[in-house]
Length: 354
Ligand code: ATP
Image 1 (cartoon, protein in one colour):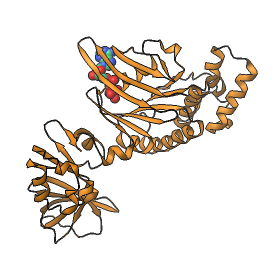
Image 2 (cartoon, helix red, strand yellow):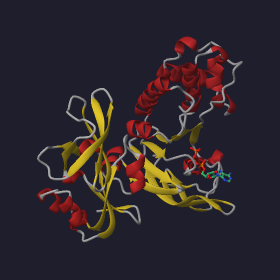
Image 3 (cartoon, helix red, strand yellow):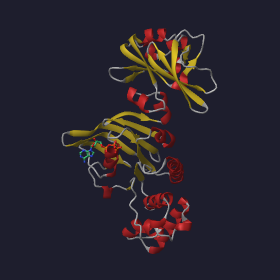
Image 4 (cartoon, helix red, strand yellow):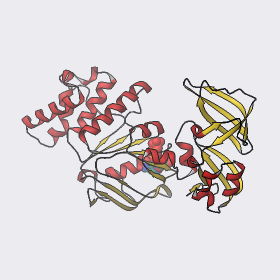
Protein backbone atom coordinates (compact mmCIF):
# COMPACT_ATOMS: atom_id res chain seq x y z
CA UNK A 1 0.00 0.00 0.00
CA UNK A 2 1.34 3.42 -0.90
CA UNK A 3 -1.36 5.80 0.15
CA UNK A 4 0.18 9.24 0.74
CA UNK A 5 -1.37 11.62 3.23
CA UNK A 6 -0.30 15.25 3.47
CA UNK A 7 -1.62 16.71 6.71
CA UNK A 8 -1.28 20.42 7.55
CA UNK A 9 2.10 20.56 5.83
CA UNK A 10 3.77 23.94 5.77
CA UNK A 11 7.13 25.10 4.43
CA UNK A 12 8.92 28.31 5.24
CA UNK A 13 12.17 29.49 3.68
CA UNK A 14 13.32 32.13 6.16
CA UNK A 15 10.49 34.65 6.40
CA UNK A 16 8.88 33.44 3.13
CA UNK A 17 6.12 30.83 3.29
CA UNK A 18 6.31 28.71 0.11
CA UNK A 19 3.57 26.27 1.18
CA UNK A 20 0.80 27.25 3.59
CA UNK A 21 -0.79 24.59 5.76
CA UNK A 22 -1.82 22.04 3.10
CA UNK A 23 -3.73 18.79 3.29
CA UNK A 24 -4.66 16.19 0.69
CA UNK A 25 -4.64 12.43 0.24
CA UNK A 26 -3.25 10.41 -2.65
CA UNK A 27 -4.86 6.98 -2.76
CA UNK A 28 -2.84 3.85 -3.47
CA UNK A 29 -2.25 3.45 -7.22
CA UNK A 30 -3.58 6.87 -8.17
CA UNK A 31 -2.12 9.09 -10.88
CA UNK A 32 -2.21 12.34 -8.99
CA UNK A 33 -1.51 15.81 -10.39
CA UNK A 34 -0.08 18.81 -8.53
CA UNK A 35 -1.22 21.74 -10.69
CA UNK A 36 -0.72 25.48 -10.46
CA UNK A 37 1.07 28.50 -11.90
CA UNK A 38 4.81 29.07 -11.61
CA UNK A 39 5.94 29.65 -8.03
CA UNK A 40 2.78 28.33 -6.35
CA UNK A 41 4.68 25.71 -4.32
CA UNK A 42 4.22 22.53 -6.39
CA UNK A 43 7.88 21.58 -6.52
CA UNK A 44 8.39 22.37 -2.85
CA UNK A 45 5.44 20.12 -1.99
CA UNK A 46 6.84 17.31 -4.14
CA UNK A 47 10.32 17.71 -2.64
CA UNK A 48 8.83 17.42 0.85
CA UNK A 49 7.11 14.17 -0.14
CA UNK A 50 10.43 12.95 -1.54
CA UNK A 51 12.32 13.93 1.60
CA UNK A 52 14.55 16.39 -0.27
CA UNK A 53 13.06 19.20 1.79
CA UNK A 54 11.74 18.88 5.35
CA UNK A 55 8.39 20.47 6.27
CA UNK A 56 8.48 23.32 8.78
CA UNK A 57 5.40 21.72 10.32
CA UNK A 58 2.81 19.08 9.54
CA UNK A 59 2.92 15.38 8.78
CA UNK A 60 3.52 13.23 5.70
CA UNK A 61 2.40 9.59 5.73
CA UNK A 62 3.56 7.12 3.07
CA UNK A 63 1.94 3.70 3.32
CA UNK A 64 0.74 4.46 6.84
CA UNK A 65 4.16 5.51 8.18
CA UNK A 66 4.88 9.09 9.22
CA UNK A 67 8.00 10.07 7.26
CA UNK A 68 7.85 13.89 7.40
CA UNK A 69 11.25 14.31 9.08
CA UNK A 70 12.93 11.26 7.52
CA UNK A 71 15.60 11.56 4.82
CA UNK A 72 14.90 10.64 1.20
CA UNK A 73 16.93 7.44 1.48
CA UNK A 74 14.44 6.04 3.99
CA UNK A 75 11.42 6.53 1.71
CA UNK A 76 10.68 3.96 -0.97
CA UNK A 77 10.13 6.38 -3.84
CA UNK A 78 11.61 7.24 -7.23
CA UNK A 79 12.00 10.84 -8.32
CA UNK A 80 11.86 11.57 -12.07
CA UNK A 81 13.18 15.04 -12.87
CA UNK A 82 12.61 17.08 -15.99
CA UNK A 83 16.28 16.86 -16.92
CA UNK A 84 16.99 13.19 -16.87
CA UNK A 85 20.54 12.56 -15.73
CA UNK A 86 21.58 9.64 -17.91
CA UNK A 87 25.17 8.55 -18.43
CA UNK A 88 25.72 9.26 -22.15
CA UNK A 89 28.78 7.05 -22.58
CA UNK A 90 27.03 3.99 -21.10
CA UNK A 91 24.62 1.87 -23.10
CA UNK A 92 20.93 1.59 -22.35
CA UNK A 93 21.27 -1.61 -20.32
CA UNK A 94 23.94 -0.16 -18.04
CA UNK A 95 21.97 3.05 -17.52
CA UNK A 96 18.86 1.13 -16.48
CA UNK A 97 20.87 -1.36 -14.38
CA UNK A 98 22.64 1.37 -12.46
CA UNK A 99 20.25 1.73 -9.49
CA UNK A 100 20.11 -2.05 -9.02
CA UNK A 101 23.88 -2.55 -9.29
CA UNK A 102 24.49 0.23 -6.79
CA UNK A 103 22.11 -1.57 -4.40
CA UNK A 104 24.36 -4.65 -4.74
CA UNK A 105 21.82 -6.84 -6.57
CA UNK A 106 23.16 -10.03 -8.23
CA UNK A 107 23.96 -10.01 -11.96
CA UNK A 108 21.34 -12.54 -13.07
CA UNK A 109 18.55 -10.77 -11.18
CA UNK A 110 19.62 -7.38 -12.59
CA UNK A 111 19.56 -8.81 -16.12
CA UNK A 112 16.10 -10.27 -15.63
CA UNK A 113 14.67 -7.03 -14.21
CA UNK A 114 16.20 -4.85 -16.92
CA UNK A 115 14.88 -7.15 -19.69
CA UNK A 116 11.42 -6.92 -18.16
CA UNK A 117 11.55 -3.10 -17.98
CA UNK A 118 12.87 -2.88 -21.57
CA UNK A 119 9.95 -5.02 -22.69
CA UNK A 120 7.40 -2.84 -20.85
CA UNK A 121 8.88 0.29 -22.44
CA UNK A 122 9.39 -1.23 -25.89
CA UNK A 123 13.12 -0.50 -26.00
CA UNK A 124 14.51 -4.05 -26.33
CA UNK A 125 15.97 -3.29 -29.77
CA UNK A 126 18.17 -0.44 -28.49
CA UNK A 127 19.29 -2.08 -25.25
CA UNK A 128 22.98 -2.30 -26.29
CA UNK A 129 23.23 1.17 -27.85
CA UNK A 130 24.95 4.08 -26.06
CA UNK A 131 22.34 6.59 -24.89
CA UNK A 132 24.37 9.51 -26.29
CA UNK A 133 23.15 8.78 -29.82
CA UNK A 134 19.46 8.13 -29.04
CA UNK A 135 16.49 10.32 -29.97
CA UNK A 136 14.88 12.45 -27.28
CA UNK A 137 11.97 10.05 -26.94
CA UNK A 138 14.14 6.99 -26.51
CA UNK A 139 16.25 8.80 -23.96
CA UNK A 140 13.07 9.68 -22.07
CA UNK A 141 12.09 6.00 -22.08
CA UNK A 142 15.52 4.95 -20.80
CA UNK A 143 15.24 7.49 -17.99
CA UNK A 144 11.81 6.13 -17.11
CA UNK A 145 13.28 2.64 -17.23
CA UNK A 146 15.87 3.67 -14.70
CA UNK A 147 13.14 5.05 -12.43
CA UNK A 148 10.80 2.04 -12.64
CA UNK A 149 13.43 -0.72 -12.47
CA UNK A 150 13.67 -0.42 -8.69
CA UNK A 151 9.92 -1.08 -8.51
CA UNK A 152 9.37 1.65 -5.92
CA UNK A 153 6.16 2.17 -3.97
CA UNK A 154 5.61 5.48 -5.67
CA UNK A 155 6.88 7.82 -8.35
CA UNK A 156 7.31 11.55 -8.06
CA UNK A 157 7.60 13.41 -11.35
CA UNK A 158 8.39 17.09 -11.70
CA UNK A 159 7.30 18.35 -15.13
CA UNK A 160 8.91 15.27 -16.72
CA UNK A 161 7.75 16.24 -20.21
CA UNK A 162 8.47 19.95 -19.86
CA UNK A 163 11.40 19.97 -22.28
CA UNK A 164 9.57 18.20 -25.12
CA UNK A 165 7.81 19.82 -28.07
CA UNK A 166 4.00 19.81 -28.03
CA UNK A 167 3.31 16.85 -30.30
CA UNK A 168 5.85 14.54 -28.75
CA UNK A 169 4.81 15.68 -25.30
CA UNK A 170 1.26 14.49 -25.90
CA UNK A 171 2.51 11.14 -27.15
CA UNK A 172 4.79 10.64 -24.12
CA UNK A 173 1.95 11.69 -21.80
CA UNK A 174 -0.17 8.88 -23.20
CA UNK A 175 2.72 6.42 -22.81
CA UNK A 176 3.33 7.50 -19.24
CA UNK A 177 -0.31 7.08 -18.35
CA UNK A 178 -0.44 3.65 -20.03
CA UNK A 179 2.71 2.62 -18.20
CA UNK A 180 1.16 3.69 -14.92
CA UNK A 181 -1.99 1.72 -15.67
CA UNK A 182 0.12 -1.41 -16.26
CA UNK A 183 2.30 -0.98 -13.17
CA UNK A 184 -0.21 0.57 -10.80
CA UNK A 185 2.33 2.45 -8.63
CA UNK A 186 1.13 5.60 -6.91
CA UNK A 187 2.35 8.54 -8.98
CA UNK A 188 2.48 12.24 -8.13
CA UNK A 189 3.06 14.45 -11.14
CA UNK A 190 3.79 18.18 -11.09
CA UNK A 191 2.60 20.34 -13.98
CA UNK A 192 1.54 23.90 -14.69
CA UNK A 193 -0.40 22.71 -17.75
CA UNK A 194 -4.09 22.40 -16.92
CA UNK A 195 -4.84 20.34 -20.02
CA UNK A 196 -2.15 17.81 -19.17
CA UNK A 197 -3.51 17.61 -15.63
CA UNK A 198 -7.08 17.11 -16.83
CA UNK A 199 -6.12 14.46 -19.39
CA UNK A 200 -3.76 12.40 -17.26
CA UNK A 201 -4.89 12.71 -13.66
CA UNK A 202 -7.20 10.56 -11.57
CA UNK A 203 -7.19 13.46 -9.11
CA UNK A 204 -5.82 16.98 -9.13
CA UNK A 205 -4.67 19.37 -6.44
CA UNK A 206 -4.81 22.97 -7.63
CA UNK A 207 -2.36 25.27 -5.80
CA UNK A 208 -1.96 29.03 -5.85
CA UNK A 209 0.43 31.17 -3.75
CA UNK A 210 1.28 28.18 -1.56
CA UNK A 211 -2.37 27.41 -0.85
CA UNK A 212 -4.35 24.32 -1.87
CA UNK A 213 -7.34 25.86 -3.65
CA UNK A 214 -9.09 22.57 -4.46
CA UNK A 215 -8.51 18.84 -4.55
CA UNK A 216 -10.67 16.37 -6.48
CA UNK A 217 -11.28 14.55 -9.76
CA UNK A 218 -10.74 16.48 -13.01
CA UNK A 219 -14.49 16.48 -13.60
CA UNK A 220 -15.36 17.76 -10.13
CA UNK A 221 -12.78 20.53 -10.43
CA UNK A 222 -14.01 21.52 -13.87
CA UNK A 223 -17.72 21.36 -13.10
CA UNK A 224 -17.66 22.59 -9.50
CA UNK A 225 -14.67 24.89 -8.98
CA UNK A 226 -14.29 25.78 -5.30
CA UNK A 227 -12.78 29.19 -5.99
CA UNK A 228 -12.70 31.83 -8.71
CA UNK A 229 -8.99 31.08 -9.13
CA UNK A 230 -9.71 27.43 -10.02
CA UNK A 231 -12.60 28.42 -12.30
CA UNK A 232 -10.29 30.77 -14.15
CA UNK A 233 -7.21 28.52 -14.22
CA UNK A 234 -9.02 25.42 -15.56
CA UNK A 235 -10.68 25.45 -18.96
CA UNK A 236 -9.89 27.22 -22.20
CA UNK A 237 -11.39 29.72 -22.51
CA UNK A 238 -11.90 29.82 -18.73
CA UNK A 239 -15.20 30.07 -16.88
CA UNK A 240 -17.09 33.34 -17.43
CA UNK A 241 -17.93 35.51 -14.43
CA UNK A 242 -21.12 37.59 -14.66
CA UNK A 243 -20.93 40.29 -11.97
CA UNK A 244 -23.85 41.29 -9.76
CA UNK A 245 -24.35 43.42 -6.68
CA UNK A 246 -27.25 42.27 -4.55
CA UNK A 247 -28.65 38.90 -3.62
CA UNK A 248 -28.14 35.65 -5.50
CA UNK A 249 -31.89 35.45 -6.11
CA UNK A 250 -31.86 38.90 -7.74
CA UNK A 251 -28.96 37.79 -9.95
CA UNK A 252 -30.94 34.70 -10.98
CA UNK A 253 -33.93 36.88 -11.81
CA UNK A 254 -31.98 39.29 -13.98
CA UNK A 255 -30.51 36.37 -15.89
CA UNK A 256 -34.10 35.05 -16.23
CA UNK A 257 -32.88 31.65 -15.11
CA UNK A 258 -36.38 30.36 -14.44
CA UNK A 259 -37.58 27.52 -12.26
CA UNK A 260 -34.48 25.34 -12.45
CA UNK A 261 -32.49 28.00 -10.63
CA UNK A 262 -34.86 27.94 -7.69
CA UNK A 263 -33.57 24.47 -6.87
CA UNK A 264 -29.98 25.68 -6.54
CA UNK A 265 -29.01 26.08 -2.88
CA UNK A 266 -26.46 28.79 -3.72
CA UNK A 267 -29.16 30.91 -5.37
CA UNK A 268 -31.53 30.40 -2.47
CA UNK A 269 -28.87 30.96 0.17
CA UNK A 270 -29.71 34.61 0.71
CA UNK A 271 -26.08 35.49 0.01
CA UNK A 272 -25.66 39.05 -1.06
CA UNK A 273 -22.97 41.57 -1.85
CA UNK A 274 -20.59 41.43 -4.74
CA UNK A 275 -21.34 38.15 -6.50
CA UNK A 276 -20.12 36.46 -9.66
CA UNK A 277 -22.15 33.85 -11.50
CA UNK A 278 -19.72 31.44 -13.11
CA UNK A 279 -20.71 29.80 -16.38
CA UNK A 280 -18.58 27.69 -18.71
CA UNK A 281 -18.56 28.89 -22.37
CA UNK A 282 -20.17 25.63 -23.55
CA UNK A 283 -23.14 26.26 -21.25
CA UNK A 284 -24.05 29.61 -22.80
CA UNK A 285 -26.72 29.19 -25.47
CA UNK A 286 -27.85 31.70 -28.11
CA UNK A 287 -31.61 31.97 -28.22
CA UNK A 288 -33.51 34.79 -29.93
CA UNK A 289 -36.41 34.39 -27.53
CA UNK A 290 -34.31 34.73 -24.35
CA UNK A 291 -34.85 38.10 -22.64
CA UNK A 292 -31.25 38.40 -21.33
CA UNK A 293 -29.28 40.09 -24.10
CA UNK A 294 -25.69 40.31 -25.23
CA UNK A 295 -24.00 42.14 -28.09
CA UNK A 296 -21.44 40.20 -30.11
CA UNK A 297 -18.06 41.95 -30.02
CA UNK A 298 -15.80 39.21 -31.43
CA UNK A 299 -15.85 35.74 -32.94
CA UNK A 300 -12.98 33.26 -33.10
CA UNK A 301 -13.12 30.30 -35.47
CA UNK A 302 -11.72 27.06 -34.00
CA UNK A 303 -12.66 24.44 -36.56
CA UNK A 304 -15.66 22.52 -35.25
CA UNK A 305 -16.55 25.22 -32.72
CA UNK A 306 -16.27 28.99 -32.49
CA UNK A 307 -15.82 31.25 -29.49
CA UNK A 308 -18.23 34.18 -29.52
CA UNK A 309 -17.54 37.09 -27.16
CA UNK A 310 -20.50 39.14 -25.90
CA UNK A 311 -20.79 42.42 -24.11
CA UNK A 312 -23.52 42.11 -21.48
CA UNK A 313 -24.89 44.24 -18.65
CA UNK A 314 -22.82 42.12 -16.27
CA UNK A 315 -19.51 42.02 -18.11
CA UNK A 316 -17.90 40.21 -20.97
CA UNK A 317 -19.06 36.67 -21.71
CA UNK A 318 -17.70 33.97 -24.01
CA UNK A 319 -19.83 31.22 -25.57
CA UNK A 320 -18.55 28.11 -27.33
CA UNK A 321 -20.99 27.24 -30.11
CA UNK A 322 -20.85 25.13 -33.30
CA UNK A 323 -18.86 26.93 -35.98
CA UNK A 324 -21.77 26.73 -38.43
CA UNK A 325 -24.11 28.64 -36.07
CA UNK A 326 -25.08 32.19 -37.02
CA UNK A 327 -23.10 34.83 -35.06
CA UNK A 328 -22.03 38.19 -36.49
CA UNK A 329 -20.10 40.95 -34.75
CA UNK A 330 -22.38 43.88 -33.91
CA UNK A 331 -25.57 41.82 -33.56
CA UNK A 332 -27.48 41.59 -30.30
CA UNK A 333 -28.98 38.27 -29.34
CA UNK A 334 -30.72 36.55 -26.43
CA UNK A 335 -28.66 34.35 -24.09
CA UNK A 336 -29.77 31.29 -22.19
CA UNK A 337 -28.00 29.53 -19.34
CA UNK A 338 -28.61 26.13 -17.86
CA UNK A 339 -28.96 27.04 -14.20
CA UNK A 340 -27.76 23.61 -13.07
CA UNK A 341 -24.31 24.32 -14.49
CA UNK A 342 -23.81 27.69 -12.77
CA UNK A 343 -21.47 28.31 -9.85
CA UNK A 344 -22.08 31.31 -7.62
CA UNK A 345 -19.00 33.00 -6.14
CA UNK A 346 -18.59 35.53 -3.39
CA UNK A 347 -16.20 37.96 -5.08
CA UNK A 348 -14.63 39.20 -1.84
CA UNK A 349 -13.50 35.79 -0.61
CA UNK A 350 -13.29 34.26 -4.11
CA UNK A 351 -15.05 31.16 -2.80
CA UNK A 352 -17.96 29.31 -4.37
CA UNK A 353 -21.27 29.35 -2.49
CA UNK A 354 -22.83 25.91 -2.32
P1 ATP B 1 7.73 26.35 -10.85
O1 ATP B 1 6.68 25.71 -11.72
O2 ATP B 1 8.17 27.68 -11.35
O3 ATP B 1 8.85 25.44 -10.48
P2 ATP B 1 6.50 25.81 -8.31
O4 ATP B 1 5.04 25.91 -8.19
O5 ATP B 1 7.09 24.46 -8.42
O6 ATP B 1 6.99 26.73 -9.49
P3 ATP B 1 8.24 26.14 -6.07
O7 ATP B 1 9.46 25.80 -6.83
O8 ATP B 1 7.73 25.16 -5.11
O9 ATP B 1 7.08 26.57 -7.05
O10 ATP B 1 8.53 27.51 -5.31
C1 ATP B 1 7.54 28.15 -4.51
C2 ATP B 1 8.14 29.43 -3.96
O11 ATP B 1 9.15 29.11 -3.01
C3 ATP B 1 8.81 30.29 -5.03
O12 ATP B 1 8.51 31.64 -4.75
C4 ATP B 1 10.28 30.01 -4.83
O13 ATP B 1 11.05 31.13 -5.21
C5 ATP B 1 10.37 29.74 -3.35
N1 ATP B 1 11.47 28.81 -3.02
C6 ATP B 1 11.60 27.55 -3.47
N2 ATP B 1 12.71 26.97 -2.96
C7 ATP B 1 13.30 27.91 -2.18
C8 ATP B 1 14.50 27.95 -1.37
N3 ATP B 1 15.27 26.87 -1.26
N4 ATP B 1 14.76 29.09 -0.74
C9 ATP B 1 13.96 30.16 -0.81
N5 ATP B 1 12.83 30.20 -1.54
C10 ATP B 1 12.50 29.10 -2.22
